[in-house]
Length: 374
Ligand SMILES: *Cc1c(COP(=O)(O)O)cnc(C)c1O
Image (cartoon, rainbow, N blue to C red; front, side, top):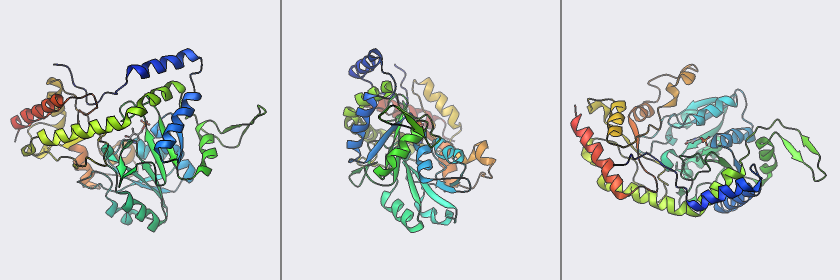
């Protein structure tokens, strides 16, 4: 049987040809494809200003810069995310302040945020883990109450929605990633949705060395911008993916539903929230019943691999990384994130998967977990 990866990008032949055309065109970096991609992203986001970037991390870094986050500031976020979410706060010279997660959604527990707010708190970075949106009504009510800015780390929720509105089409700053494993990819890439078109000039300066070009061919620089522009090669991949986004999301929801129908609930795993309307099902993750197992998560993953199935870990609680421990974070501070981070596994889910693949994954989980029951 074929090896089943936990994800695989869906790239069609037309997209491959389109990339070939860019390569033949002689214009590889930011150009007409980037412009066309941004126009389509803007439409998708209800006409809001969107700028493409070369990563989701870049989108977060620029968002923090646009807010004016600096040394001494505090930014509240979740300990259960890709470490980029907190690293960008450190890179901005500020302090990431972790708040534990909700065991059901695995997203930041909004009820715990108020207690973490101090006079130095400037913003909340909310992450839609696995594509399940954080409650936007509650999030923005909190932000308004404590006068905090919001950066939505929507790296995983492109194509998801909240109360019928596409994530990114409303709210404060919204950062998306188009990394190879995300629901829509450009290989590497990302974009930032801006709450106000007046931010576009500064966003563009931060994106590319602070340079502003005049029609007469001269240039001026008044900001030390970075190097975050997307290449046309990458934008061509994105343009090839966008028409399929709705289909990708629908297929992922079907497969997730299939998992719920077939996954043996007597195994003792914690299943994700069964939301087939708002989530884009970026990942299907279960938390293993480690306390009742005679093997570790690592051994479970090895055994799944022997059955030809890849299983990922997204993510260990990041306050336990050495970098964050060195800031004073330690075990026991965020028990829910620690529990989930220790036992979570990502099962295969990607649009080209079949229902038979889901069956195979569920059977392999049953076989292994029934055998190692403590
Ligand atoms: C992927 C991801 C990022 C970073 O995106 P890159 O494009 O890899 O820089 C940030 N936050 C979360 C939650 C992610 O999943």
